[in-house]
Image (cartoon, rainbow, N blue to C red):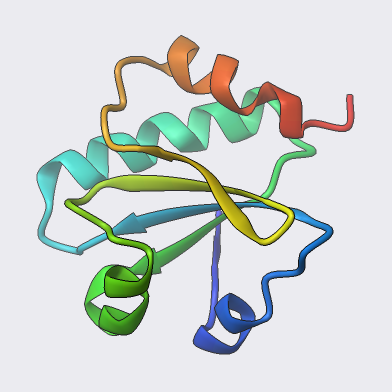
Amino acid sequence: MIEITKEQLDAISDEEQTIIFLYTPFCGTCKLAKSMLEIVEKIIPSINIYTKDLNYIPEFAEKWKIESVPCLLIFEKGQIAEKIYAFHSIDYLYQKLKSFSTI
């Protein structure tokens, strides 16, 4: 997973698909969700999941109407296509994210 900058968040393109994992460092559920996403990344090596500590981007939390962490945002054409708050299982995340793979 790759930590994304504020500048990169501002520049999310209308043409690209982007996946961003939002967390806070003291959130236990966030740590579990991150571990699950790391496994999905190993299963689908061509996928890029960006991460960002929500504490550093309160303006985006308001703009995107983030209700809690962990939160996985899936952008398509610059717009939020899906918000995932419940990280049910690795298989659930794999099914949600496999369409972003080039394999």
